[in-house]
Image (tube, one colour):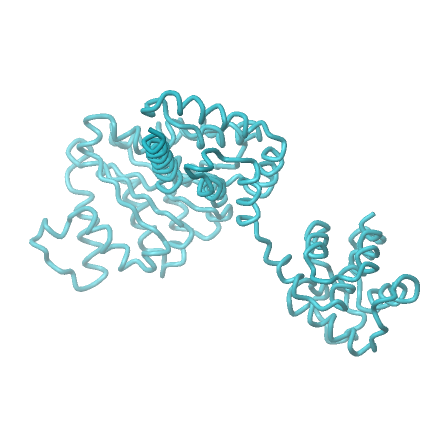
Length: 430
């Protein structure tokens, strides 16, 4: 009986893992995009006018990476293609600036996706001009009532602007202005200045419609999203386990340690992909013998996700280099973030040696300069002077590229760090 019970629990946990892993890895579309309702409505109406009424258009979806540009577009396309007549008629063409690196490759991909090769018996077009002419003729054939609407989706839109003479962009936007073929050109980009990249003739054919995605997701919504991502669906076969699991997730999201971890992630990035990675790592620690996600699981997952490359570099510094970093932090506090030079750092370091240090011996100045230059090579500090030719190295203005938390974490993890150095650092942050 006990063995059967264990087998049942094991199979239930396998099912939980399968459901949630599929959710995180396949990134299924939500019913409605959260926090971008107005953008969803605007884009849906725009593409519906092309798909249903044959009205050509062009639009740019602009936002930082991970803000939900592709998710928004996919949600709109899903909703649009659920309409029976639209599903049969609309031809979506997906291009990506990272893959279609020039116009010739892009044109071949368009003809492949539209199955235009078969129209003329798989004829191979020798030149770019022939390919383009055939494509435009195929798109313009007939009128609005007889032509099938084509949606050109250009991911990494800004990269297409680097193609020679922007020929592809010019012709696609030109067709989208014509009254013959219903065409919508949808560009996705994370560059706010993308219009400045377009040539005058290309820009004149663009509708100048832009949909901006600047995340307005509140932390409460972020927490709700975590809860919904980790919760089991209502059709889960074991009702008792469903209730227990979802109650445990609700309790988890109310735990102060979890709230702090999620707040830290929310402050650094509201990207759903990074959140799903965090939840995936936490989920991987669940097993039949450990049947629920614990706050410590999320904490450990967070440490893996938020590995700080600069903090890692600090762990490998010499004691002298670490002392120079602390001296710089002292100067930052004293002069409220104003730039400093080597001479100021050296003076601060000498004060520490004279007053507080019993474990660090006095280094010669050339050795200290070498250590300072090494910190610059590691890009932990950077020069603020555009021209360094006339300024002695000791007096070049520098800026520290580390914050309080990175330095403190490095000190805590530093092997055999002298106590007086830690005390000096604490006084620097006090």
